[in-house]
Image (tube, rainbow, N blue to C red; front, side, top):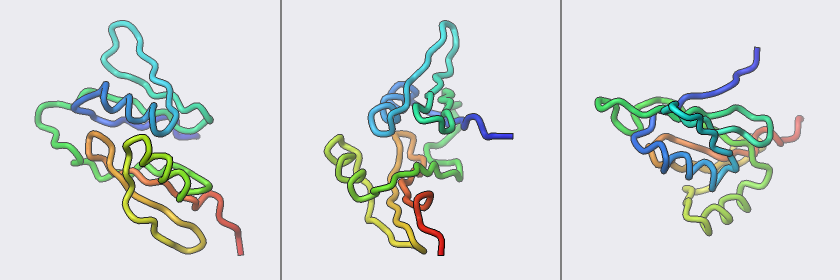
Length: 120
């Protein structure tokens, strides 16, 4: 059973939608009368549903990190910086690299080359 979508509770749904469209290539799908914006992954990945956050929810409160598979993390981080998204330092792990940032809701996001590492 594949994972189909993740829900992010967003204080500013429109700013969050624009963030994921601009930096990660999602396409926002809005239906009349629906307060949820669904971000459709253009590469067959998991969709993100943006749900308006309740008044009591603090930004960054959820303990979730969205990890995007990127073959060339350094190049992606450079391009992202040109578009206004700054990632932290690039970390080296066991056969791959990754870098972290925050979305407009202060949720943790990461770009990682782990999916492209070589076995052995």
